[in-house]
Length: 82
Image 1 (cartoon, rainbow, N blue to C red):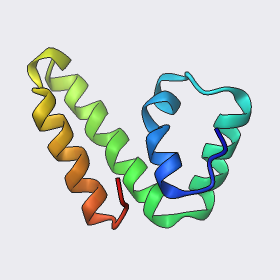
Image 2: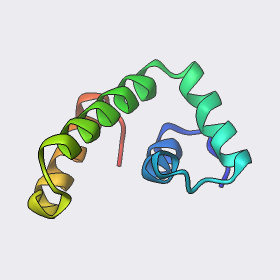
Image 3: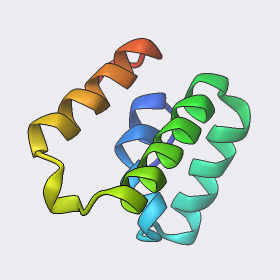
Image 4: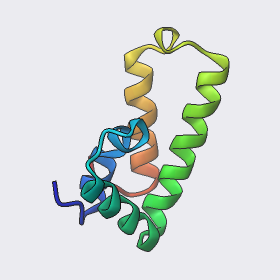
């Protein structure tokens, strides 16, 4: 996967955080983040939210619908098409 657009990077967000990207994909992800303020802001917010949620909630307690709604809200606030 060549990660040049914001959508491609956001689609790979979970895989990046879980360490599931190849070395090349990870490098492309990080290079995009260095040059894209909106994606970097989204990523920082996403990671902080995820970490906080893990400290306070078990994943099973967060309904899928809420996860989707939060992700959609953040994408809309940053002007990133899903």
